Length: 363
Length: 250
Image (cartoon, rainbow over all chains, first blue to last red; front, side, top):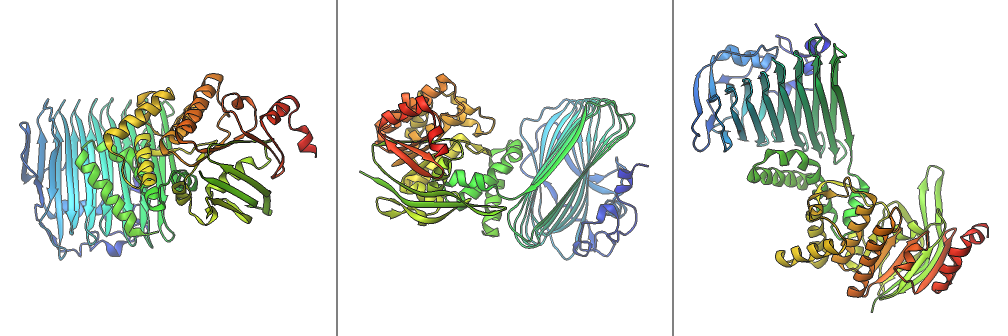
């Protein structure tokens, strides 16, 4: 048993002493973790617009395809055997993004939701999940990327200020398949996301990117686990966050496990945080555990810094005022990842939201 | 006709050992259309003068005045100084990740002109500035100064000089790190901008070679935080022949 495996969550009510829960404000989870939440089935996930040929979506019985050690995911599975299933047919190349969103909420009870996304072999698709409004949501999102498939999953947490959202995005990535995940978390009271990847055959790769912006009082946690258990798989992790305001708190954990069998592994993970005011806290913990030396590369980097005075001076010396200079620098900081979304309207909406968060945070 | 007037300027920086005075009383008057070369050895305070005028927060003005047509420059924020007509071409231009040259230039032009330039005319302006500085069109899509070579950074600075049309341009060691061809192209850009806008130039340099392209009307020798000798272009020839030794030991 590796230390990283014991890092992940045990099947009991967490106390906050466990490695996986040590940063999370348990009292603000609305009882999702300890069974005190009123669990309901809302089927809030729906298709926005119409579905292309080769794509199906329905609410039905789900058989779990992943093992879980997360107590919230376990409670979701105990609560319901049904969920939303999105399937992309084998060999289908879906030109337009598949748009899903969640609506119809309440915060007096918690939606316990299961979702399965299946990218059939050699299919190619982009799936967008738009999360807006206020809700309590515990989400077990499983993703199967079959051999040769290319799936991009864009999960947008543009929640209102009362939302509590705990989710695991657990992808199984098969031979020569690629899984690209872009997570954007710019709203909510507490958001805890666990992007998790199991490589099950050689030639698989994943690219986990994310941006987050927490303002006063918000808690956003992104905790990855990439399990290199087969040879010649490649993983990239790149998360960028900004924080502004009193008690804004973000957590980024990057756990990468390279097992003895995983020769030829190529992995790199990066987390950068921009602290825009006093009183905010960014925790950033990369963990790399390596059981074989026969790898292509394994590395990580983590930085947390403030506005670069030299950048602001340079921009202002060209007549740009302080607020606009800060906005340019923050947009620039996030641009590397936001531009990866590839959907102009969404990119502009996210950037506008980031501008808004920055303005809200004040000077 | 505009006048940039520096009187009795004393500037210090904070160090671990306390405040250290770098500029020890600088007097200098520059008028539109004039080119003043400030020459001096490394560490004499030339760049401090440039950054102090532009308003870099690292430098504390302890005494003296800087005025532009009678307006107190030292009271202005950095962006206000630019809006008043000051431009600093930096020796080490700063990288701004994720911000494209094109976005940066348009944001700056909008700030300085008070309104967004008309798109069609603006595209033409940028294109012609880039062509005359022999820059590849793809340059506009790159991030500001990110991964630029030394020569590209300086071309980018002078391109801004051409586009932003200041009243006074302070060129801080614009010649440093340039090969002969790049030096010529960049210098021609400076001369072209001056012919178009008739701005005053404060040209800070260690070497005389850039003065072959940008002819100074006045040469000031800078040493130990102040101007120690002044003259016409012939003073540069003397420095070329004799170096700074007599000023440093003095």
